[in-house]
Image (cartoon, rainbow, N blue to C red):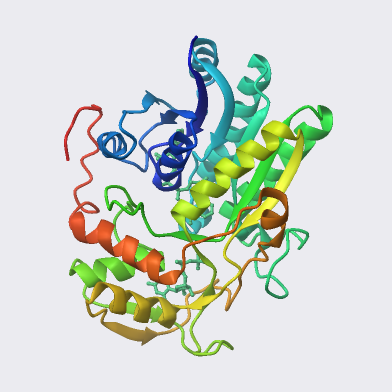
Length: 351
Ligand code: NAD
Ligand code: UDP
């Protein structure tokens, strides 16, 4: 019998690669599509070490209509997880057209190809950024859209497009998953996050300070109305997120409809909580300076994850200790992985 695949766009990226592990563990066969604009082909060998087989990969762009038609023709694809996209808020302000092109046009192009081939099961990577600066936390899914930048707009637009698609044909099975702050890495330390250049996000910056790539962390503001004055976020372990995707796939497979869920822990952690926990679990000092607030930052927000529990039976299992320990393991085992971005195109390159 020919294999049935779950297409994972952006499958060599941070969340896509971890979700491919969770898919394989659940008995699905991931088929990766990626253009390597923000990933490294060496992740395939690492996935092989973890899963026991190298996932099939198609190198290409989610906006490439003929490529997608061929992909859906060549493989028996039963569902799609759509991670491919651009995600840097600052870049989206500087270059909004690229963000709308990749994130919105990419999603439309993918959905069109799915429609043409009769594949109507789609798990979409959305973000808590669609809420902008929320009135209060925890944030429920019915909180209004208020994206504050082109990246957030591109996610909100894609969500609305998918809702219209579902309205036009209710046999679609769509999950729009809004992630809070994904961090951590697979427990093996073989794969993890690969930010380009100087990280904007807290966890990769902290791990780079701990390993000695960067000298000091600047804490962006310690005068917020939070318990210790620093910004509060809902950090969620990437493997919990990955398992949430599998749970969502199972759910929509059995229940056609449009599902919208927050994926977070429901617990806020401050910048200093993260730094102190990281120091404790890694045994490494993280030098830090207090700096001014980062423009556009929200003081504090965290998820109301109760709908995901009620609907999927999914709940984040890993706490901040595990998030920091796994980030550190990945960083410590791959000390210069972030700076050695050669992006080979072959799948056989050993790391
Ligand atoms: P990532 O950059 O590590 O992964 C995205 C992958 O998509 C990369 O491998 C990249 O090469 C690929 N890609 C980009 N444009 C493409 C294109 N046009 N065609 C094919 N492949 C393309 O990012 P990630 O953290 O894994 O994020 C995955 C998804 O989750 C994104 O859509 C992102 O917006 C969303 N998201 C991420 C976060 C986060 O903090 N990491 C939070 C909320 C939502
Ligand atoms: N942060 C910080 N120093 C850094 C990077 C981030 O103090 O070098 C803070 C940031 O101000 C926020 C929190 O860490 O309060 C999480 O930031 P991140 O960029 O990881 O996530 P986001 O703000 O996009 O939710």
